[in-house]
Length: 563
Image 1 (cartoon, rainbow, N blue to C red):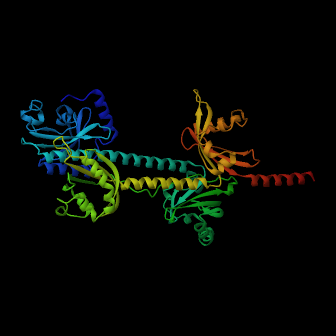
Image 2 (image 1 turned 60 degrees about the vertical axis):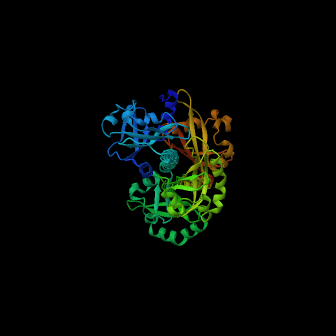
Image 3 (image 1 turned 30 degrees about the horizontal axis):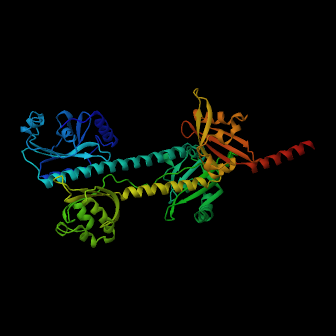
């Protein structure tokens, strides 16, 4: 059997390393495969091997304690991955390819070897499920078929494991980005759980109150209120807040760490879960003692994300040409709630007739197709002893003599957890968007663009809420993703120098704050800061009323001075 071509080897190694499984810790689901292989084949040694460029590494090892890998040059499995069929060596001492192999002439005294390739969805053979004996022998046809079925299970498990790890990584990165944005905002923010205890606070909140973060998180928010404000919150504000889902500009006195008081105006929004129960709230505190208003910035966390299941259970079985059960594993027995003696020799349809007859009706056409020789892969909802489960099913024709299928092998992998995770992620994004869009102040995130010399020349709108789009008089659905010069062609020549001003924020990290008269005749208090390098976020608060009052006061003073 010839070695793999350079193109095949390159594709195979890329598929293997994309799994992220090499040199990982043992996992119970894979260890159960090697135990099953050893029992089915009556062998003292069974391995799940992954063949790397210069070595073969054992993901699961039954019967060779302490062994983690071997050189690829002396690996039997390097021969097994050169073809799709099961590779079997009845007596290694009589095989010129292996008679002088150090694993044959020395420990562990290999005489018999049989390995089934692990094939990924793209056709890449990345390793084997193999059994080893110290006595020359051969497998029977049933054992060969079962070893190949176990290899197919491992391939599906590795692909599923990769998908779950990718989903988990995306969620973790999303939460970290939100937390960085939350903590970096110059607004005075805190968020609370359903029990009224603080989950997160912004850096500006800590600066204002004089605390360290570890002294605040987990404490009741009322701990930081003056006694009179505690009573007002308990008797007046909180009942209305839980009834209406928000409160605006409530006058409170907060107590700093040194005991001094700070006058604030507090506005908050309540978020509920899919059942209508309180999930968390987000509050912004405006320090009115300094007469400079700061409005809240978007923040959200994913404190209720469920743990992702690492090991997916597998239901395995073999059925003959008449769909009569010939073999099922313990997971299959547990799923249908029947012992082995009530399953072997019984048609699959009869088993499901009393468990999930409706579900089996959808399975019948797939069984007919696999018996016709066509491999079947699909998702299927099955009623099990643990409830309705969403499964990924693979049905493989059994061709022991390379002839017409005389039965089929079936594997069922539970993907209910992954589907639930996807749904939770969508729901979390919907709650985040709802909070963001209903903020009364304008909020937007931008990405700066520079020329070859590093000079800011443009910026793009990444996200904006309804208040921000209304402030600029633009349509958010068309503006997001566009450059500012596309939306406002004259901005590059504007004396205010918007691109250069915001470019300094995004590139240096130094925040800026200023007041600006808008085209609509309203005054805005603008805060710009950098959440991550290359981006800047903007908070815009309408201060037209304050400006009007200041103008009236100035006019009265001018009249008085004239007299």
